[in-house]
Image (cartoon, rainbow, N blue to C red; front, top):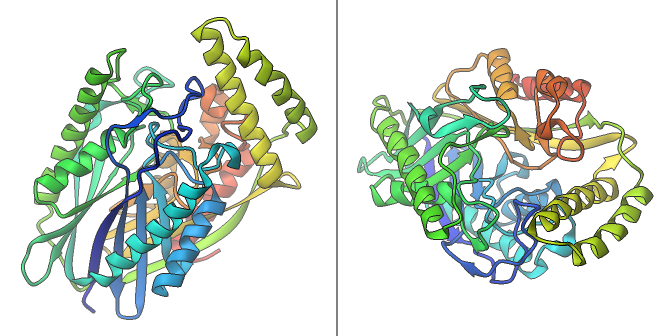
Length: 424
């Protein structure tokens, strides 16, 4: 059975003035657009089976918004929502999408995002044509570091899917899976930007690699070694530099993927599962705390105090959102998706910010070659640490940024293992 693939991208840049996501220390609306944000879609078809992968230049999306997009894709294309992946690149210079309360998100833009993402997927499917696919790997570990532990683990691999037109041999698309926070740009940036993944995709496309689709990996505790400065122009130069380094490694991996095949079957499925949530404050307690933070912000003395209060506001708004919209009887319901291209490659989504050790443990358990773990996909439950990371504590293991327990980390591993293996 011959694989067919189509790829497309569509501008989803929000208007000036939207609230930005990514930093509690930055509460001002965006003041301009530095570079556009895109929806990038890849449609995979074999016979009657099809799957769609959407990558959005956003910080993250809650399951409610992901479901709106997945159902919109299903409505436009007839591809089952269970075979649709909606992933965020996790740029910290994009707009709010509702994870901290719907009132911080621009509802008109969000509605446009849903329509544009679905349209992008439909266009990718319309363009589907016979394709050869291959897998390659590179190493860009020099640009990344573990922010929790000096010398701690990172996943240095740049995992690449090369997709070429079967008739002409020309590149149709390149999928890049790499694990590193898009935080070259710091909280002092008030311009919309895709950060280094945007530059990475731009370079690959300029270099003739087809439509570039970036899928963020297990980067919850990983940041760039090269960070921004107080000089915004220099910060953007650094983001471009990091993007170029990873893009070059991805292009090398693509060119070294010799054995491209077209006789590949597409398989895709999703599974819902529940996770135990640690004890949280009551909704009443959170609302009362929020009422006291707002006046404090207004009277904050200096940028440092305002930044601290901003982080506090972020935390309380996240708690309120979880308690109002997600947590039921001490549990949270989420979802993951598995996509395979025969023996060429496997893709498995994680609904949050997986830390490096969690990803390494999952890889070891599954034992799958050519496995792309995609974080920030189809939902966002917060940080997803390993049991060891939970015991170590720290920011990524603290409430409300992480609401999981050792038991629920095990529940997620079990659910992902079952999904990838095709059983319970």
